[in-house]
Length: 315
Ligand SMILES: *Cc1c(COP(=O)(O)O)cnc(C)c1O
Image 1 (cartoon, rainbow, N blue to C red):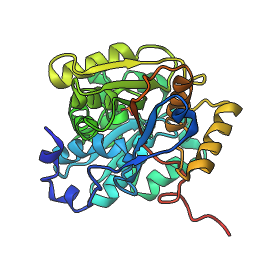
Image 2 (spheres, rainbow, N blue to C red):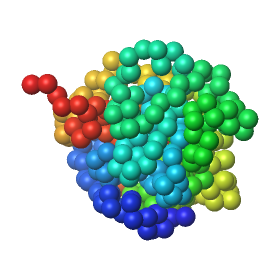
Image 3 (cartoon, rainbow, N blue to C red):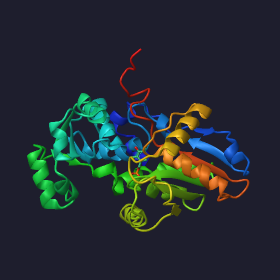
């Protein structure tokens, strides 16, 4: 399935996604002095609520769910859970979020989970060991039963499977001819897997993992095999920029992100996009990109709470 197939779903087309997403030149001396042109691929502008790569990954699932309840998985601050909840509200679908951490159910909801609930998502909290085993069919069946959602359409954690990866192929197709290197931050690696396939041999794809562990090479390979039958495109990973792991940060990274927002007026999502941009500035300084090349940074999301989706700021 490709994007154009998905857009036949009247519900999704009615949301008027901005596709292809805009490409913006970003004059920045830290690249220019190495003879490199930086452009931003503004996937964060695809839709104000179904932001960024979450649109590309969820769209094929929303079409396939065909009106059924959507059930998916995520942690306490999952961008994917919020996007799924927002999609449910926008399209009039029931959504169930299975959340990692039983204890979270006994506490006041954090802003991210509160947003999910405000969008109509029903939350079902499970302990970490159940969560880890969620891909085991018996465990999944038990979770669906306990959540009262046995007929639900199940979207995997992070939204990444063959369908989602094929949904991200269009990102690469949109960047072919635009950039020599297309770079994206990676969680599950699904977006990189699809983008690299869409680029084919026309540009190199670079993934910056935000999780520690170095398992992504295997995962991206497996996702491409599931989606396309084998490896596609020319992609690589640089594992040096996770800053300690998922949702971890350092004062240096925070300062970098604030400065980037200040310089360019572009909101910088902190879990993924900040690490990507930091990595690209570092790589330019290492002369990792040939002079004369164009590097595209995929802006996969926007900060939460952010201008479009966050609570109204108090005066
Ligand atoms: C989910 C997410 C990613 C990671 O996408 P994967 O396909 O899981 O690698 C990157 N950036 C942002 C902003 C995200 O929300």
